[in-house]
Length: 278
Image 1 (cartoon, one colour):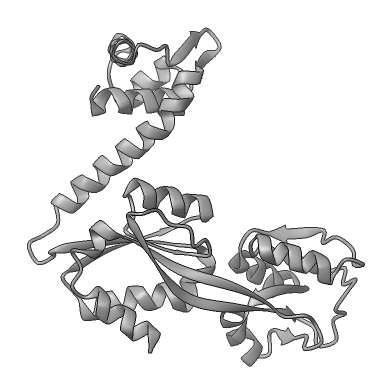
Image 2 (tube, rainbow, N blue to C red; image 1 turned 90 degrees about the vertical axis):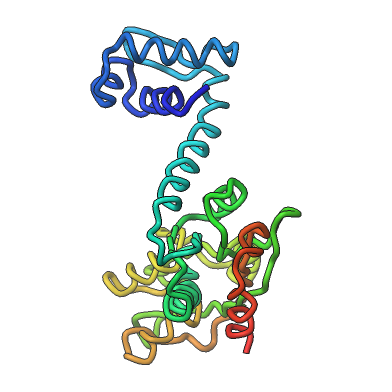
């Protein structure tokens, strides 16, 4: 197995057939076929069904796809990091939930960029599954996440507790039965508490997976939603949003999860932890 064969396999999946894969890779179709056969022979499994209508993954191909993507990403990252200029002596890949980037993620980015100019930085935004998979695969070194689970090769640091407040673009918006209420996903615990607190209320017609998207909707279209205080606060101060003080308040804990192998190469990390804890 080699990287060229894996890249060819992934290109076939991406393009849908061997002909388009050969065009994208700028090789002949016979070369694509030979690479795929070599990969299948080595694994002892048929990976792709070749049909006139296109190429489709077999069960073995589906299982390989995840590993092939990870290997390809790791190789691309390794090439980037080994090509760093001499002035840079370390790399820090930070994965951040979109709702933790305001203040939390950007603060970490600014701290490293300002105080440790020899560290190269890479920022990845993704959902909870992305953050976990990237960290476990070694594609990222740090995860700013709402999910505290870690394996034995990772350390967990409490980061912050978000207060979730009901805010609205109207001062007198109703607490319940607001036709413009937007549900913003904030984890399983919030979902359960929200369902209990609003058991007699209508189901929201619109929902968003992140507070950032929910905020953008409110500012553009109006309405009400539960948002973290630190995200809503600037807009409350400017008068664009109003806190509905009689509504229940919820909380959501955030964490920083760090791969130990990366942690051991960062002499600056202890000072950073102290700076965010003070």
